[in-house]
Amino acid sequence: MRKKFIKFTIPNTLLFLYTGLSLVFPLGLLTLTIGPVRMISDFAKKNHWTQEYESSIEKIVLFFFFVFIVLLSYFVTHKLVKSKNQSLKITVLGVFGVVLLLSVYVFSFKPELLISSDALSIVNHSAEAEFHFGPYPDEEKMEQLKDENYTAVISLLHSMVIPAEPILMEKEKENAEKAGIKLISIPMLPWIAKNDNSVAQIKEIAHKYKGKYYVHCYLGKDRANVFRNIIEKENKDILSTSELGVHDIKKIKAFERGKIFKLQKDVYYTPYPTDEEFFGYVLNGKIATVVNIMNPKVGEEKMRIDTEIKIMKEYNQSFFNLPMGETDSNDQIKALSLSIQKLKKPIVIHAYNSENENSLKFITIYQSLLKK
Image (cartoon, rainbow, N blue to C red):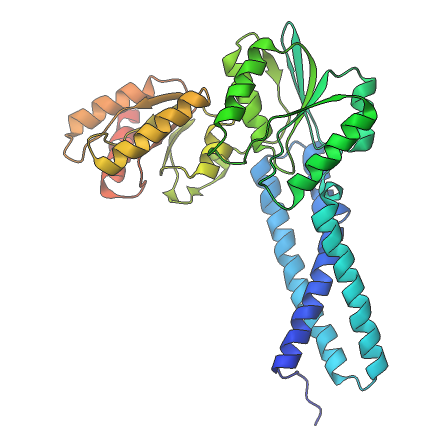
């Protein structure tokens, strides 16, 4: 009787993994650049999907893509193991090797191919300066920006975001020189740490720059949105209209450290955000006020409060530390809740843990006041 399944011996397992890599890179490249993911991204922009909804659909597509790759890899491996034609095996493995190398080359050294060039932009106007936010500009885009009389391109790419951004930075420098347009580098990491110098430079831009500027980061939009949020809060004369995708806290149910509770419209109770969550969900212009109810009399909490005060001040985010102690009475918590309700919305309230006894007590009392 013919065996239907291959035995996963060490040689067969290595062959399966090699086949999988040889398929996932080229097919993944096609999926991202011209296939389903790019199609979904384009459709989402035209129909004004939220960033979270678009990401959810793309994750589903990618899940089925990887299932397909596993099944296809097994099928190809099965055929190769059962085949007695040695020359055919060598040819197939050789072709796989060439395709794999070419795909890895594109992912590592041609990352601009992964970037959509027709993304919607944000336009910010002030009396003397105008800021446009869009995707990474390739050589053709640089020429277009020059023809449209842009003063400069402001790049938020950072050399530590490897492997793509150092390569893109070098290409952008070359393309800007060819086009004859000024390139201003303000490297920002896609999280809050170590951006002090960049934030200071952005604040200076808000007051001193004149002209027309094109601002971009890479695949994500968090850094561009943080840039926009800083200059708008730094210079109240800057007006903005935004169609660039932005992470929205109302579209997610949890942060890394715990569940997010919606206390009322535009008021959310969360755990202490990670650096990436601060950057993506709190400092992007969608949140008006942040309230930390941790207690500065507790050693670890004081350290986090001090860190957050520094972050909020640096990024021009409205912030209050209104501590709640574990022994606070219901009346004290009611008074705290009423004071928070008077603050400008949308509001993010947080402790370190959003699901411990103290947090759940606050949530219950806060929501009880809304029913009266």
